[in-house]
Image (cartoon, rainbow, N blue to C red):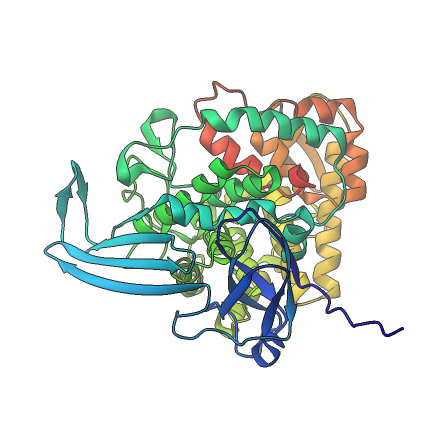
Length: 495
């Protein structure tokens, strides 16, 4: 008996009869060996504009058509389509010059007869359009239902796929408390209201009339929730938020994002209020070249604008957020300029390590007489994850030991028990006092991203910890969008 060799599947895709288009990583060998589809259907693909020529794996766009059923993407077949014209879909682009801007139209003509379209109007002069005022540097993106349907396949990919590519955390259960919190969050998400109009689409407001400008990366949180919960409405929200950041919130002068304020473009851009991971992941998942280029441009802007604050204006977030964002992009696409910028941030952070206080000290926390105000929620939820991501790229035993000592100090604080979770405290000569604890806030939940799975599981067995994260935030929280953004981006929630 002769057994035929079966090529290992790079990806298993469930089709519902509609043509689909999405992004996925494949081995670099695809560039020489090609890709093919096993099963009923047809495949075409192209490499996405991210990563170095020698990257492995590479991210590609897959366009697949076929009847309902399961197909396998394997090595060995046709090469990439270079001109947008393939056996599955023909992609055409057109540009129209208007008195107030440039309209870019992308049309996908599927061989099955469906036509999808995306329009992006980039404003080159101030104008009023459809009752809204637009400024130079803003854009307005609109897509049709077919465009959204083409990406619906993302919700049928298994959780293991999203863990393998890095959008969701590795497997490792955070137990019943995390499951209960996910169920609670799922009931809140339909009540999250986007700001009105085309300028507000994809963004949210909070108390005091503040426009959040997607603070804490609403886009990333929504995308994680969408694929984890297989929710098409959340996926559409995440896609709108990615468009909003790219179209409305980027400053032409600095390349950075505008922070929250009374309007979308009223704040002063700064590196500590820039998030690119959501934009990057939506670009990768939906094979959107424009989003990928915008994420890389934002990373270049972060590299070009190192933290400038001194004294009380030297803030942890201005070091840690840019580091986290740069390392997230470097995990996908190596870039020597971005790598050097991230390395400089780490060198500056590690010089701030205090072995007695067991933390990294920044000027904003120095309150006099050697007393340091520790922002434990930011150290745990932001700084330590950013440093751990850096260590994956550049292992360093001394830095790893510093990270471990800070993590152990946080573990001791949480492990001492008491109502709520500690988010702020003061340290003098290694002694901790004036501890502030919070109950049912996203900041308290954010802190838990500091811990490895084993430590997290032990903490979540404590009644005080479970009570501190139960049913947060509340449905009537005036800052619901900000609280959810901070919570949804955490890794531990999706374990």
